[in-house]
Length: 579
Image (cartoon, rainbow, N blue to C red; front, top):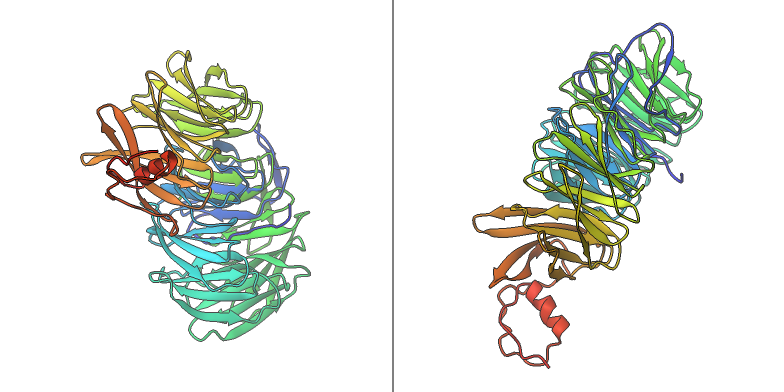
């Protein structure tokens, strides 16, 4: 792994667990085998989530350290996971350049936030839960509407990777730390840049506001923690003591104490007013990548590259539980504020959800023999379908986790699964370039839809269930008739893989939106004229993409058939005279 990424989130909660002696708990699902670079707790303290370098986000019970649900959609390592303040939603960032939103109650994936052009390294909600900020190796911070997924301002100014993003307690200000050795303060509403805090001599790896919002603490690869005055940008105390870079810092809820985690494998506690060093918490055998306080300040959780999460008493330094579970690096850990779930993210490409009250796993879905690539709930939430690189689609009872039918037929890995609106049918897309239909009640195979020339990576039913849209690595989107398997239209106005599709039907028309590997988000209208389907572009985020809505091509000469098709997809009308 070339780089490590960390996040710090301080939320109000209660102790995750306590104990006078360290207890190592290995769950029956899996165990961490790689680094834990992020640990976060939620407001209720009944849920903790962890992110890992093995593509996983998992949820844990803090009393028993037992794992629960696994959420899988990201296509590369999960680097950051955080709960919304209400606890109803989870946001995860990944090296696949996306931020993904999840519904906690159903574990169903929500919006996919596309826009970054490099790894997403940090994700955070505003205190009121209305906004999300994400930092990236593309040197920008992007703001998003947490309810609609729509993009907001793009904050530009850093000259190197953005490693950490955090909101002030009021939510009016954002601080970002970068490999360019600076911290920048931004207006959270307008994106306007404010003060620039300079003083560190190496990368900024972690930032946190004091509870009052008047002070910032930052950790750096220069092995120091620095305190800053938010109003004047004046540098205050420089806290030395670590013998390697500081990966994470956190304030206690009262603001009197600071905890810092370092690549020297220790967590150090500091007096926030004087900078005097306190306890040194030793036990990790790999770098400490993140630290967080419980909201009552009675406990600290630290994540490490030794693949574990450790719990500590901040008053005595006594170690508590050691949490293990994921099969590869854990990248993020977070409590659900509602106290019901714990989520953990990992490089094993999954998000796990766990029951936080009892420590009992909510679902233990074992059966796939290779990485899980897609998970979908049936419309009523009674059944779950999962697709994997083992070339199968598996069906599960959503209440009991009991394995149902195994749908065999694809000759390569399954990349995407979706239920029809009625819940009676399932569609699956695969690296074998096909879309397959299945009966969700019996598991019986239906149509095999062929036409794509590369992997099918995204799939969705129309709102009436009569059509399917599939996106592919062949840079096209195709619409198919569900009953006949006939290809209705091919949209080839893309400059990258069509990685995500969403469909909506309104009284005014039928539309779908696409996310693409060319960093664009686009919306298209589906029209039917005497049983002939055609699609036209309404808008796109790519500024170099031409839209020619209602341009008249009637009797125009000299257009090739391909150019006519592209112009019509972009909104042109009328019939040209073709050569």
